[in-house]
Length: 85
Image: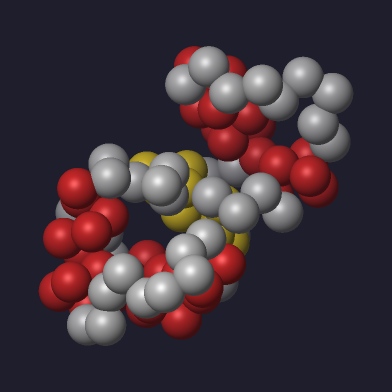
């Protein structure tokens, strides 16, 4: 479900969201992302819609603030991995 780019980005940057590593291998990362139902989105607009649907209070947040949220992991190809803890 999650491609290599998603898994590697999460492994490298999981400290943004968690104090201690939750995964050490791509397999563990994939299992963790599946368990927390992480999503991959293609734009800031999709992030805003997703957070709104999830009931998160994002009123008044700029696009930059959304991209800096700890749950948002920017992928090198321009997509975004959203991981809710």
